[in-house]
Image (cartoon, rainbow, N blue to C red; front, top):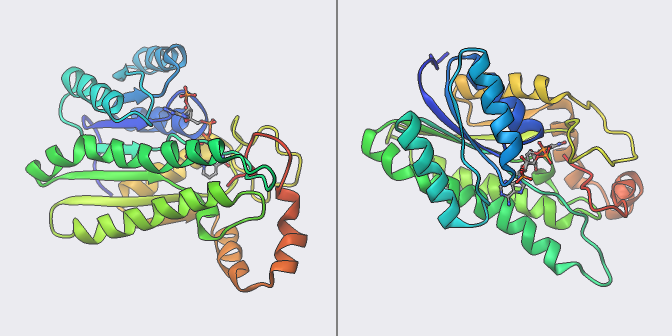
Length: 262
Ligand SMILES: NC(=O)c1ccc[n+]([C@@H]2O[C@H](COP(=O)([O-])OP(=O)(O)OC[C@H]3O[C@@H](n4cnc5c(N)ncnc54)[C@H](OP(=O)(O)O)[C@@H]3O)[C@@H](O)[C@H]2O)c1
């Protein structure tokens, strides 16, 4: 496993849930961490907690859907902590996709944050990584990217876009010293899933998910989907008739703004 101590990571979506836990886990392994999200107060709180344990963390508030803000936040982290070795593009939103009227504004937000947010975060560090011939680009996608789920078309499509974007990048960056890892979690207990009323098979704590994610990063995995049983079932469900998918997964089409992730 790669040694991590002393290196610099940026985690987007670090103010909550998986990103918060991944930033803590990285800091526990000796990484110095840049913390990015829109809400500054929880970022400051996390930075203080990491510093109290002897680590180093810098809050840098930004909307990941705004390229200028992402560039500025990454520049602030670079100035405070040094060149970026690892980018974890984790920030994401999930909203149900409605039929009539179609909530196009929600679809747009999911593509801006979930897809362009990853593109902008990577773009902010790709140049320096290529120049140093070293670095690691990681995106937190989802098992939901493996197939379109009823009521979740836009969320699933945004995650499928992330998966394929990273597939292409990984091949293009082969031999450059820059690695690419796609993380596809199943259900994790975070504010994003807090309002889900249906059974979430294999529901994990953010801390457990963060340990798995950081281990996958250290091992330099290409694609890491977990739990593997849910990943396999979701992939298999692509071959099921729509009628059955609607019956089994139609319950995922809740009438809330929270996504029935993964
Ligand atoms: N929970 C699950 O079951 C699950 C499963 C699979 C994949 N995922 C993925 O894991 C990632 C994290 O989700 P989570 O469950 O930890 O959700 P969460 O607790 O709601 O956290 C989402 C994070 O993204 C940040 N964020 C949202 N919009 C942003 C924006 N425009 N600019 C900057 N930051 C933004 C939020 O910070 P601010 O609000 O402060 O900006 C927050 O830190 C997402 O990509 C999600 O799709 C989640």
